[in-house]
Image (tube, rainbow, N blue to C red):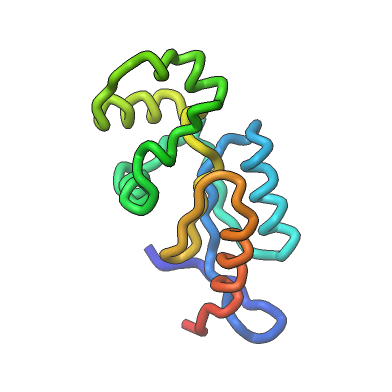
Length: 136
């Protein structure tokens, strides 16, 4: 699938930023607002409506590790009682697919850059990368 790009004022092309999150998540809304204010085209994936593809979640796991992706202080994690359970990685992935609120949201991808949670420093790096994307 080709990467969609938008032309900026300076004649360069911007890559698409993909945001995985929940509509009701304040951190996800903050990420959407950050990129929209800078006129970066985003593709939002609501994890309540469409779970992440296994390859996509694997990309984040390979980069950060499964434990870093989990929101251990979040309500979903506590309500699921996961602090008391010993689950395998495949068991955790199945739980995450059923309840995306277990993740530190949002998960953001811009090209080969990834970020988890509300990390404005990483978002600024992604914005700089997106702006400097070469013409196709």
